[in-house]
Image (tube, rainbow, N blue to C red; front, side, top):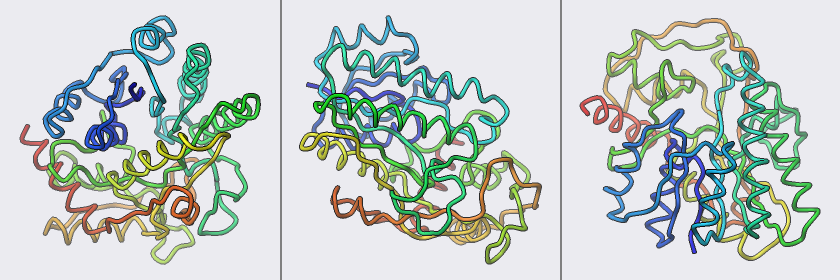
Length: 334
């Protein structure tokens, strides 16, 4: 029996693959490499000293994806595959709905056909939109503010209805806050194509000299220093949350959502300063206009994940910055 990991070569997917392999699971990775690289799979094998099956497949390609279900005995699915940039989703919403929503429908139909009814879904804190209060609990109102968030929320509704229609389904939806950092080996980390959409790779690319300065989107939010506040979580902590969720769906049925965050908020400038301390250098920056769809403050109440999944974040902001910097230096050198 194996775990199918869609989008397993991506940033969070690749770190989760390492944790799965280290825990003794067999995995099958499918990825179309839109925002990842095949070399990541070699690095996963190097880190874990374990082999696994991998296929270059877009999850919207029903025929090719069905071959995976036919050829392999799949126990559960961890579903990462999808587009993930807020700004890009505002510019190209149809592509986000097509990829994230339709891709999930294709996957779920095949899971139902082949009686694979356990899933861990890669959701997002963007489903909460602009929250009434923080920290955010899983019971907070769901109201996305951008197409990316809406695509995640639509998928959550689909999965909720699916689990309600058939009690054999067990689905955990993990609402991520802001993953940063990298594997301690420096072999894998966040490696976006083109100009980064997320804060940490933007900072590290400035540090390595690939970009001239950090652009801070908005300096007039109602926060301590005017920049947006987010809950930053180490990607390895996040990956381990998927293992706890995988264990949970073996024991229960229904749809269950969990926040994966630290419960602490840091501003953009606080993250910049923490990185400067870890790297021993200054990061030049400028304040630019806010991005459409962004909000002022967002951080988690992770109590439910601690209580029901026996999971909590263990790594602090210094370790997140140090690991991200180690990865960027090593990857820049090849």
